[in-house]
Image (cartoon, rainbow, N blue to C red; front, side, top):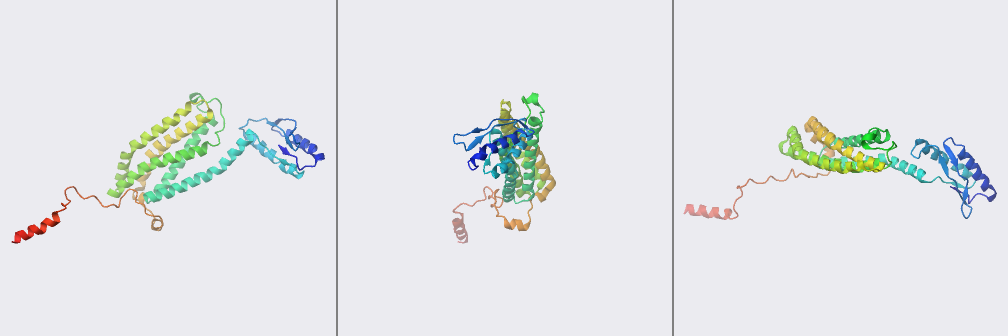
Length: 320
């Protein structure tokens, strides 16, 4: 779309014709429609048909080249805009791609801080964040392998290969982070509880896994079943989202939390529950597990309310 309102009337036609010829000469342009002016004559619209598909990289490059012509139109006093469904999709994908590193960075930093407060440790939060990134990377890699490179097309009934939808990484990161941190807290909180009692890191790992494994497995199987049901949808976008989430939950629950986390905790030993003194003084002390609460008194050891009054009377009677 060309806004010719500020272009002198005698130069408008020449500017639009020259722009149309430049666009039609592009190597990836199949056709350019004749200019159509609006009712006021100040706005002119042309449709550009690329040779490549809407999701192709060549189409994205074409949109950028078309926008590079804006200074030429601006020099004549007009303004050039490239819009339409394809251009809008390209812009949305670019915005989401630029926001993804910051989004993941904020999530990881918040996870490190909150887990450090909860478990009074540096290595436990770091291990949890690395495991989360591993799960996200594995899920995105599997999605690209299936839906972008065309593997398992017959098994998953994928009609055609194509790029992964632009908002899938954002959606996958948000959902998988919540589930991954749930599974992490289920396991590590029980380990922390047993370690505070026994001070034996190996026993704490074994007891923590044995007491929380069934909860994690049951929760993961439920989410895998829910997300996996969307794989049978005919819409390729819904199918790819369901596959990515189901695969991500599977990797995070059974590979990361149930296998790598206990192994890492066993190898770290007591170092897993250590924190530098300066950081320990800086962070507020949040006793989530109640480790410093007074131990309950043994049953039968509590004295009767009137015991204190009866003892002096008995002693006096004995002396008399």
